[in-house]
Length: 275
Length: 192
Image 1: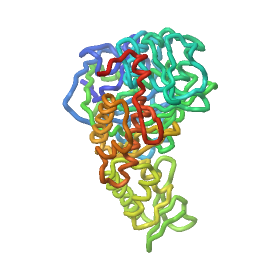
Image 2 (image 1 turned 60 degrees about the vertical axis):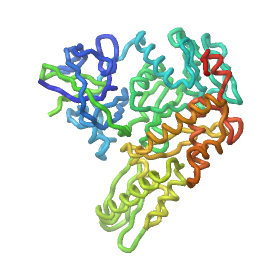
Image 3 (image 1 turned 180 degrees about the horizontal axis):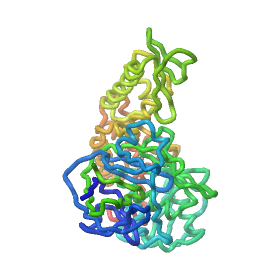
Image 4 (image 1 turned 90 degrees about the horizontal axis):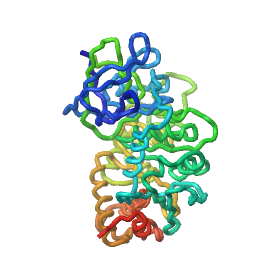
């Protein structure tokens, strides 16, 4: 039976949403690609293991994924390459991954909820009904966003947000909210992309695309990602083509599936079974 | 620019003639006379960087480079150091802590992954202290966690700056930080 080790924070595409593997049930229908190159849902078994592995953050032009170092990804020329080799080797710039787009046309309730959860984690102060974020950019007045209260403390601005502000925000208000969270075009924000953040980053991008673009900071390959505001439609991860190791090992999950000719899509990348 | 020691050299410029070894780290190519010499130079920088950051919890890039230079037998250019540093960050050996300065600029401070737990403990302890006291100064943090350490004052400042970057504290001046009570009240959080 084919199997592969994956990071607990890798995401699988269920019939209606991306889901982190650590939240998945033991048996679940997951999108993958069959021998004819068509997307097809097949049942997989997900089980936690005690195996510790280094984790690798890999980025294509359409997705950011986190993988166990032993996970084998399929390049666009059909060549398999281990996630570890992508970082340790020196051919990264020449690799193009077979990534499969399974984007939602409308962000689902789950996507809003996951974004809200991740933002609350970044909040220095959160109560049951509200949470606060330090404003990273923009000199505009954001008082017009319903559900957002701006508080200035010694020249620092904080936004106190109602929990439903994200799902209520539409159009210009949504754009304003993006500016509040990520900064303005002339004043880019910075995300700290930690081990568990690939779902957060992918959700941000799917919601604010095409107005944001991500790139690694000037020190190369760090786990800090800069969010750039942009007016022109562009590939969101165009400037983030560097893979890097997370600094810590983590327990990995094992996926089992039955069809030898089928390969699962994990975090938007096509993966091959372990040999 | 090439750095030479006797027969061997390391450079970020491709030699015009003769044989050479090449390795590309990120966007920077490093050249040397032989693969062995290239490995030796890179390993020297990597080991020195690792040792310095195990001895000193937090260092900014310029200070780290100066410290590494003290342990290197050749002149370390900024590009050579940047290439090796970038590689170490990529491999997860080092990490970056984001801090906010008194001028509201972001500052990146580098630390060793092996010091991650220790650094997190200090940050958590300072945060817990501030929640009770309502304010903290760089000197207090230095006295509690970095007393007698080289550059201890700056490390204390960077720990407070990291909390400030995350929004737990706000600067009142370069060395004084307070809890943003107005924000806590607006959120409706109760702090005993």
